[in-house]
Length: 194
Image: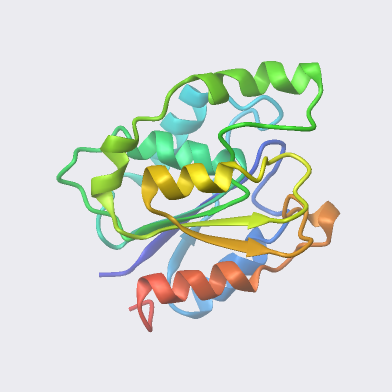
């Protein structure tokens, strides 16, 4: 069975920015099947739109299905996972600059972010799906409060990794490749993608 990877981009992102093209190429070279869906209305992401788009893209999820999220893409994955039956098992999830709270945003951005911050995540529905959760943070992220790392650890028993001076892990932060994600992914998925 081929292992599938879905990379969910950030707010105001697209499949061809940041480190997504690099990661897609690296994983495909290792025989993974990789999709980076263009999420709807990326300037103003909405929970229902993003979750249903991801659901349509994934189809049937199973133990050979993996997810990599960036920023609001992490929440999208978690909210999608809430909708799966508890019998479903997936391979794992890597979250880069995932947030449950936000800092350093203006009033307009906070209007978009508010539903994502205020709508509870049903952690108890997500936990049984896999033992493989990894959350990666930067020590100088201008948007993600450092305390959110603890929340991912508490709620998901996620392995927490801190990177030095990577900002919000975007092209603007000069992050166009991300070895830590590839390394964590290979550790999680086993020695080969076959």
